[in-house]
Length: 480
Image 1 (cartoon, rainbow, N blue to C red):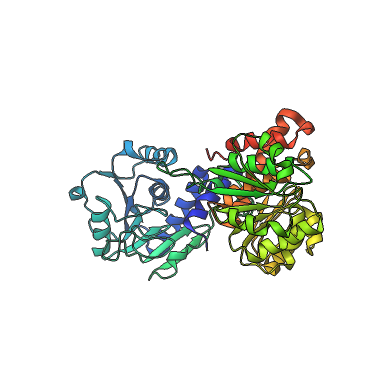
Image 2: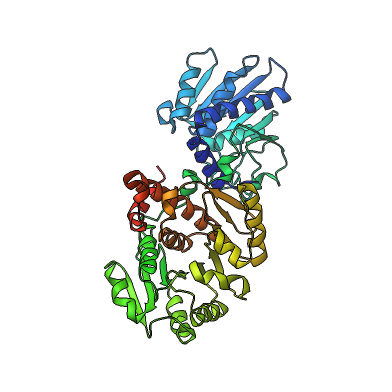
């Protein structure tokens, strides 16, 4: 099963892999035509109800594969209002054929006659709210006819994720006899009284297995949002090192967090602040963090959506005791990096953690690794399930798993072995974890951090340094 949101991401990832949506539409339309041929003999009358999006475009393609049938295309709306280029191209292609077409701009003008098959391609997945005109009238007419109704992807008026009506229980929706859905089943189709066919339309497995530009589609911020609504992050680190927490904090800001605070020993607070005026720095007594700081850090953490724990902390015994005691009592969301990672497998915490180890650190945590990416993925998935937290294991191919789902990422380059890029990654994931679920935050974080590194490598070759990455994150996160 695949959700509507994830399906949109996979479509976009497929396009990035060289399988354009136009090609997918051709395959989808062919699959719809096959379904029509399965339920009706040649010569049967077929009415295709086509919306102005890609769902309608699928049926416009299908019409070309139904030359042996008495098919009529009903476009619900004006041709100039067709919303996508590929749907418009397929509408124009019909104009070069002898397939009858009808433009419906007023619901009172819609006349279906008495067809043997009705193809519902009015609205696809991701649509909310009750059907409007002329779709509402078209749905009523389709339900009233003694015809086999074949829905494209999902019956119009039905939520593909829940199976419920998009406009409430009393709202009109198409009562389909058969549904042709694409690539994978949709959760909402399981409860319908309809035969469901899942058509393989040629989306490569890599579009779902690897991160890609489609994974950025669900991100964004509301136009009326206010300060703090797009995430507040607390970076806890520093002491032996000052650059690491600063890199994480700057990356979190560039990855979209509204506010980023840094809790660090007071001996390095001025130096950390000096990296950026955008940071809010809280100095803590002493030159390293230890158990005495737990209460204060917990107090600071309570005012943030996520904690990034570990950059520059070091591996002093007292510092690791601090990490352990903090996580013992913390029940929020945290990205754990660097030396703090070794505590994660042993701590009993109610916190939701995202660990970001490289392969050596993974082994130090008690996990296993392998050369083959698929074998590595299986090992990471198993270890994530064992410890009960999400893992982002860095490497030439990054592996992300929450113990169930697995995603691989192949952005990035050998120049990113330079110190500090992992701190940028931790901050990036932290910003994303403040506004989305841990698995997605880790997967998208790996993807955009790698893209930023690739842009830095294009400018500096293997001479790139970690400070080259944060300012390149905003461009990497664009979903155009």
